[in-house]
Image (cartoon, rainbow, N blue to C red; front, side):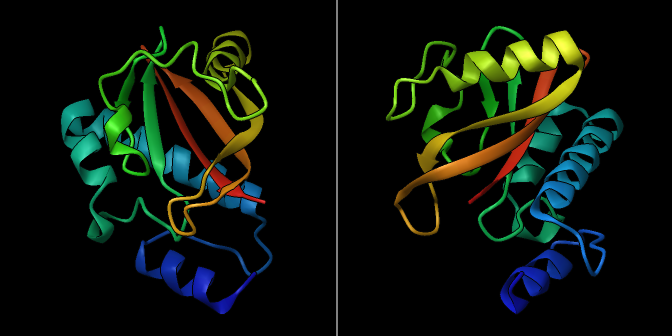
Length: 146
């Protein structure tokens, strides 16, 4: 991992181990977000997820939240998607990744989904791996670009 990643993660308040993998960091970010939603409510949490000072943005990684039907509730990486039903959305290869995320979260409680998405830093389509976790009536996710 680069120094830049660790510096951004440290500024974001993410507890990173020296040998933490991108997978570890995504899981930690989702768990931190889940605790924040429980403590502060979804509306406040969604605002905080987009604020760099609150510790939920780490380089190109961010937290997003869907309801259980595929409606995007918050997404600082792609704000234009908030409020939209994204259950049928496909990546450039035709994969219905939001549908898969919801299935994984509903069936297993948590898990991983890979798909192609626009990296908000580079503005390029890249392979992305996201960790999702169901909490009550929402699915919280965060990922990284490979």
